[in-house]
Length: 541
Image 1 (tube, one colour):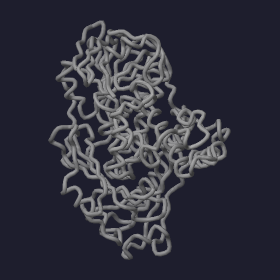
Image 2: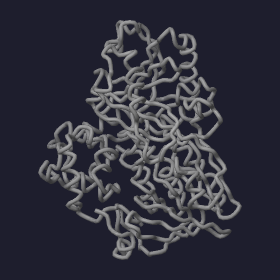
Image 3: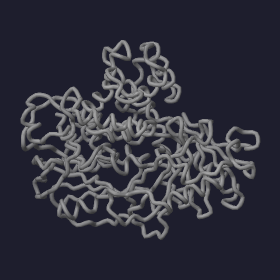
Image 4: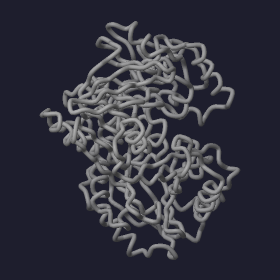
């Protein structure tokens, strides 16, 4: 399903790739080249493109293939960071929660967290004080305040051991992290950015007048990009990219910390999540996941191996099972694990001995000694939009480009549901109204499929459905709940090029399918069944 980059560029003179538009050449120029297709790179590309700059973004693998699809999938202030006096970071993240929830109510929604009180851990007064701060550090319009509950008479107490009689409940949000990255890339593309996936920046030569860079696809084909400025948003690879490819000094230290998660069969029936305190002063979450499962994580382990090859190990699995079993009446064992994932977080090295205590804040480093170079160090998914806004705020003056910030209050692709429900009210109830409106408009869609499509694509579902008036109009069912119309949409609009892109990032259907069914999806890609050329290395403008 891949093809040489230059052949693709030569053949398309008017339109190509996920959205079409624009002419192609073997050498292109732009204002800013963004290296890295995780959440920070995609967010920065979107913000800069929306300010009228010519943007190219390249990612050596799939969008969100590494850190940005391996998070705990929370939009949260970080309650435990208050213990490390990270008040500025927590406040920034708390402000962002509702901004993000409103921007894409189909992939983000409010979530209540239950914290059972263990008297041997933090005292109740400390938890009350922390939650009071959490409630009041930033304005809330959607998320309710924290409260105390009696687990002996509350549904949240049912799956827990009887020893836990009291809990505190507070609010944060949930996000489909990989889809969040794709939506930012889609919006960047819509605003003129060129998006290259499976494309490395193998060489970047700097001068006073700009950057001369060489992009290389997985098949070895190359493309030269001249840029006025370069953004290093390579995440865990940021330091390595500077040293080995941009030939610049690596001025900041990164702590590479592996966070691993396990997925087990559903441990409880209610829609709330749990936050458990551990004897080592860390916390883990147990979160409803994909309807039939519970997601448990995360760990904080120094990562010493190859960045792109992080894997959960037996010690981490045992740790997560043991800590969850301290609270759940039904023990969690390694045999219960049906899936796991691990990612490497690029954290700013603040000389903390404990990986859990390393700051989750970010630093933007702008070097204007020659052509501008902006490096992104650290960060967390909740603050990506603010990080991108601040990155554009510092980069635009360096390029003598005046344009105001614009992303706050703007919808991400698929997030504007007004065509179905009228004016938005609350993001959580807006989605439910949208789902019902979609049912009214397409009564032939089975409820489970309709809701999954609504969650994945929001109002962009109409692009996928087209003129379909029956399930058969969506094409062959390649695997349960997955038809060719959706696969073609993901290839032609969202840069999917293989089964893993679809099953584990753009959807989570891989969790629900058998190995044979997953193989059927892989064979669909092997047959080259997409209706148009894939977006693998395609420029989108």
